[in-house]
Length: 270
Image 1: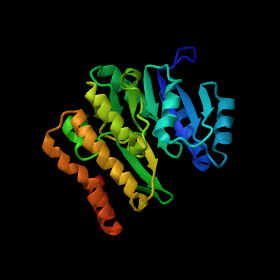
Image 2: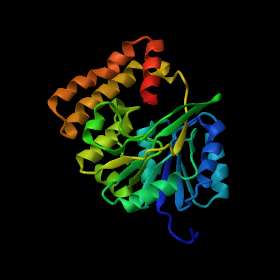
Image 3: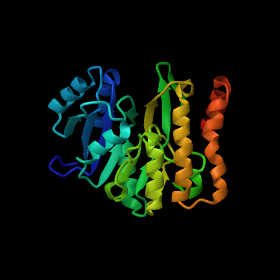
Image 4: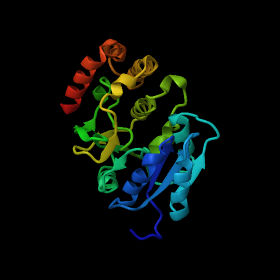
């Protein structure tokens, strides 16, 4: 792409205590086969040298906007700050400890160009840790309202969304009851506003994860997920009986960790 052309993508990144991995994350963006993007970084009150790493990249690349929260505000508020600087056709997400596969942006832009009826596109992820890849997701195509019953139907970090959809719903809702599930709520808002989305079949993103990450999930996080299900099902007009699924996150939290890990891995493989 000609460097003189206006970028079509704004990559919004809330970064927090990710100094050891941020360089790798940013390098994966500059390795994209589609380079028509700008990067909007917002440091959310990091206690390590995350901001310094980000500043070193901003000094070298003129397509980076770097801002900073005076204190830790949470991902939803931080991403909203990034959105204030997003003036492009598309908005893409990225986390500071992950990696985008080289063809990610090319595939997502091509999809949105070829399918104007969709406002959201994402794709499955490859999960990895210090020992390498341990799980690989698979996309299911068009996301329908019934797909919201089980949980968030889109992977948040690899998503690309038409900016008009973000503007229509007012970005991420800032509420303590939405922490850790701000993306799930965002998709509910977009579908309630008439937008649709699609999950590509093959992975486009690598997520740095813990094989036993479920052990860190708190009761508060599970209560938040139950709350979002409760209000979200109503927002998109799902049948009343789907409300029974609101208790699933809490029930899962009552399972022994070893049992839930086995269940979780089997579901992901499927």
